[in-house]
Amino acid sequence: MTRVIRLTVNGTSHDVEVPTYRTLLDCLRYDLGLTGSKEGCGVGVCGACTVLLDGKMISSCIALAVFADGRAVTTVEGLAEDERLHPVQQAFVDSGGFQCGICTPGQVVSAKALLDAIPNPSDAETREWMLGNLCRCTGYYKIIESIRAAAQRSRP
Amino acid sequence: MGGGAALGARHPLTFTQECVIPVEPERLWDFMMEVPKVAGCVPGVETVEAVDASAYRGSFKVHVGPIRLALQGTVTVEEQDRGAWRARMRAEANDRRVGGGIRARMSLTLAPTQGGTRLHIETDLVVLGKIGEFGQPIIKKKADSLLAEFARNLQSALATGVKC
Amino acid sequence: MNAFEYRVPRALDEALTVLREYGEDARVVAGGTALVTMMRQQLVRPGCLVSLRDVQGLDRIEAVNGALRLGALVTHREAEVSLLVRERLPVLAETFRRVATIRIRHMATVGGALAHADPNQDPPVTLLALGARVEIRGAGGRRELSLGEFFRDYYETALVPGELVTAVTVPLLSASSGATFLKFLPRSADDYATVAVAATVALEPDGERCREARIALGSVGVTPLRARVAEALLSGQRLGESVLRAVGEAAKGEVDPLSDHRGSAEYKREMTAVMVGRALTQAWEAARRSARGTL
Image (tube, rainbow over all chains, first blue to last red; front, side, top):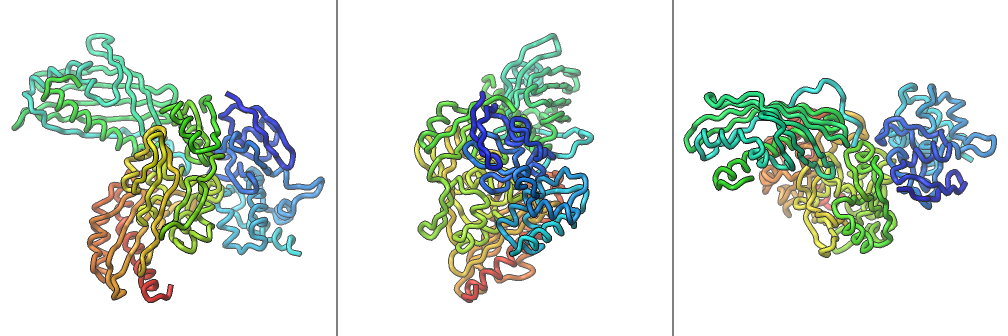
């Protein structure tokens, strides 16, 4: 049982035929070749699969691809413009906000959503927003620093 | 569903059920040793057929909300001691679709008492695979309530003489 | 996951027709956070998934006759940030805020949470303490149940095949009342509670003695439950150590927790008494402020 769905991913429209059981994550990775989003836990807890659905953070590993039919998805691949990294990405690079990198796409997508919603978040607001993005390497300090730096940079 | 349950040694869950059935031990014993008959008193049992003198094959359905298990397996009577009113059975069943199964050992003892016979059932249950990972405590609650219903069905089957 | 049909009705009546067509083989999905997780683990294998995504009219939050009515498709996040909910029933907004992560709350719906009926969830506990009622629609028409009648067992509700939750109506607090939700979770912040308590206290005109209290508990039984024996002990009482101790002990006797990785049954039982005491103290304080008009 398959279905043809229309997804707008990072601004580009795609018509994809997917089995009904295909998760959004698998659709992005295997049907569309966007392997930036990762599968960490498979139960929506770790945040490695975070994408934006109509601008809102979701766990794509527990969303069916068919749920996104007719909707707009933003993945980590959609953050940079041409050759220029998104300020959040640049801040993570400059502040050392990652080590192995496996959680980083999820961190960066979530951080972008945070700064879209709260342009100048307090550390407490940052922690609360980001609590669902787990990292086994950094101890989170550099992630918070990176987000702080990105917020400062983005201030006019 | 916050993350998976910890994998590790599977300790058997133990249940004890006790009830007084208002019939003499002999009648209760004879009824219980007819496995197809008594299996009919277990809620969720769908089919039972004899494989040989002491082994039976059957299917059994149980659900916890939207989670439905269809278990297929065997029950073997390992020991029958009518003199001592004691019997032991072993059951093994699997749900191929969910990927898991149960292994149970049951020991039944009968004792004459005021008002009939006290039936004592001790069950050791090991739950394997997917079913086991998901909520051992829920399984315990479910098995407890199944056994309680079994005891009630048994009582009414013997009281009325009607099959479960 | 197994292969399944997927239907996306555009209206409630169409959804009910599809459910009738597929019978027990169909499962309703809204946000899917619980259901898809279970399907990925092969625990649930529906023949047809009926998505309510495009059904109109089920996502409103409105004030109705001294109550708040939340449509079944309102997401946890919408309930959490809604100005109406934060103004009229802040304890409810606060409860939705405690659920898992923002990602989950963006998808998980109020109706889905109720239909899922996991006693470890947060919103049903507060909804139970507030006296919420569930609206249900099915082939037989419309009916309404109190939450106490709605929750039957672990993952089991009073919904019969072909029915779905359409809304939940939550009475506002009466005058001189306070309410609190406490989530005790010694593990990570996004987890389910080890013990959750929602308490409401309504005061007598003297502003000191309790007229009526409600204590709802989560994660300590097969459904969220009201500790009615404990509640009754508060009638006419002033807030005090010995009252709270007695109420806590009574609440312990009304729970039947399961041991799991969030705590042993004994630990959860002990923490029930502790958390009930704290929740009542907070609710009482809030009720006093409300009585004095200084809220």
